[in-house]
Length: 280
Image (cartoon, rainbow, N blue to C red):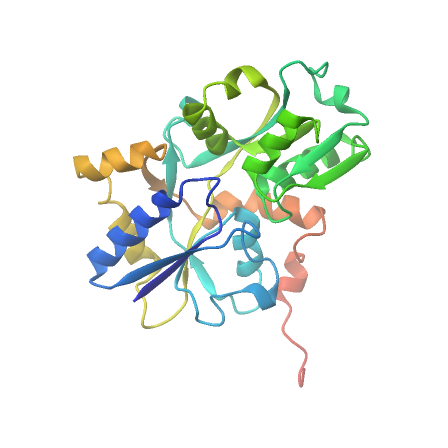
């Protein structure tokens, strides 16, 4: 049994992760199931790690979660060296995406500084596109006090709705989530306006539990390379906004690891590499 979990739906279509899990399981000769967890964009606390407890084998998580899991003294997961390539002309076939800071179309804000005193919404505190991208950008610009208030909405969809109703003034949205929302409801294109695109960032990682009874990360990557070769499967991925897969490496996430460390959201490299005290 290949037990998979996604923390990225329904912002990204659950069907996307079903397609990947089903195809991988078929290639590997295993049964499969997929769990969708919506409370956060991935585990960032030891007690939330389903891989260390061996309750999950394959995961679709946001980058901060992978970086947290991989910062453990004995990591529970490995990075699968392939990532989604979405249909976005800006990424030029690379496994990258953006965080779009959006406001209502009629907003007076046309630059980040115009949002002084605004109410900012975010999906959850484990999300790179919805939370950390903005936090990092504000820190780099010395604008940590820009917003008067911040509101956790629970999802990108809820952030978009909160902007529409005026409950919040702005939010940072995963560029692929926003593209799919606009495709499903073209009126979003006239109701929203993007004032800054942050990124590009490395795409959300695919991770696999470290275990001798599971395929290695490289074996899973090899299987992923074949998934878009069949026209029927390729069309199903295209419906989810995905063109295929491309190589990713741990080094692609290093800049984000450093940024999260500066924010105090990850342990420093010194503490990661320190051996546990004897007897602890």
